[in-house]
Length: 433
Image (tube, rainbow, N blue to C red):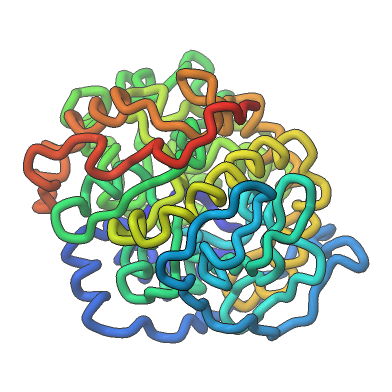
């Protein structure tokens, strides 16, 4: 699971402890989770935490709270895919449930882009349910259910949730997570989600004006806080980019230590989130930060890839042939015109976010979309197609990640190759940003 960013609300010791326990989740953590049903997620927001001004959703965008859609229904066996029109009825489950790794935010916008009018907000389960629509806004005949992660799921990994709940058809699985769990809890990613992982390391440019990237932080021996167990950090230290004595795995998502250090330390985050939050919303900082993406420093990881359990690739193959192009186009449409979808995201965050320690503002959403596009986080793949995996890039990540995970006692599948856990079978090569 990719615990990756500051929440203005995650400062509560209990939440921090849970996050730390989960952030390095490996196959043993998932094994434990699959033998016991997940506890109901009832983590309260930290005492005294107030939502920043402007977090309210636009008038009229909030759906009725606490309304649940019917449980997912499997498609009839042997039903063939429709010839045209984008209909998913009869080939997909009546409700397509997608599990995210965090609370509603711009990084999940391509999913919320597929939510049509008349959606409802399930406050208790931190989910949004509505008609699944195509690029023209047409109802595809099935519902989409987007389930939030993080505190709403007791910080379980998406892989763990999919293995516990067969109603969860799809979920966010980062490529490195898929490599880590390939031997025991395999997944197949069917669309790349993000071309570049938003995860980064940030620092104060006023304190370190000569630092241009992560390698410079290493040379300067700057202390770097991160969520313990992150494989990319073990990669950086094993390659000498950073030293083991300068990295600190005690980060919990709480920004207070960065502020207290007055810029002397660095920390992980999301390039599409923290720079805006620290400069504009974190009252004790209110100045710029600089950052480098971990992808650009050598850990070229696909983020938020749309994945499923392996048997579903055959079982719902006809569904994915129609659904995956809809997801691809949703990515294109969201970054080009995010206003309608951001209203849904803000309504969801306003509807249940505080119950799970989360606030989100329009400014943060707008910044997120602009940065995703500007920095190439959401972009065409190497061959110019939205959502398509570069198989060589995945194989290269396997080569550098395998010794890291083996050293962490989570060895990947023997002789693992990219085609074992990612596929471009359902990608429409005509869809481009």
